[in-house]
Length: 349
Image (cartoon, rainbow, N blue to C red; front, side):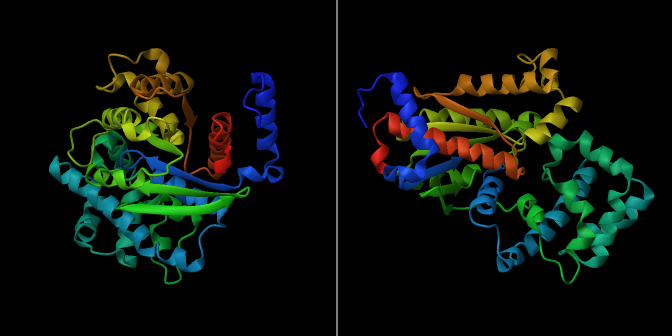
């Protein structure tokens, strides 16, 4: 490719190659993407979606490995609610309190425990309690899904379905690589733990990275870290974003920001506007009560912490939405390849 082509003609050439990858042998090769972000930002869920989209999903045996994870998520979530209620001396209705001891003492999800959870979840005041204390409870955002499906989880023939797997939470420790081929290019997605204790392991992932995808959970603006119970999650994410994008390891790497959990964010700002959050009350106003304005506010906030000299590419995502993930990844793929072509590095593909 002539690197002296006029910009317009060059762009047309690049666009043509991206639209006809099979005709451009130089696009064959390998791309390594590093997924970073704080804990519970959705990295593992995004990886699962990529497996669904590009590797045909999970085999029967793989699905079976998630059985105990799903059951544990359900039980630990309801136990955490009761633990919190006890800490503030809150008493639920007599019907709920009748189930409390069995649930608190349970070590595994049994049919009896599942029935007790179902009875608790049918109490409207329990749902109200969760909404009132959502920023303190530290329960997974899919807890309501777990409670609704708890009786299915204890059936002898239970095999987790795709949604169960996407919604279940298993803390990532160490480094996990997922590889797949898409349009004659092999992609490697590297997922590392987002908790503070895991971040020291990130250094091992920096070699040969083509781009960094940073995930930030939009709904965490009024939540605190599980690790210390005091630090605002959004503040932690912003500071980490600044550190990562300003790192010498990534000085010439493309950065892609996923503002994730847009579905939860859209619902949450209706009952907890950004301006009511102590961390944002000096910046957010009534106009940010509207979803579209709130999204622009979040984009601007992360841009203000961006420390790289290169362009920042931002996508609003919902890792639970397969269609959204497919569309976003296609855009990411084209962005990375276009940047490589423009820099003359297309021979790597």
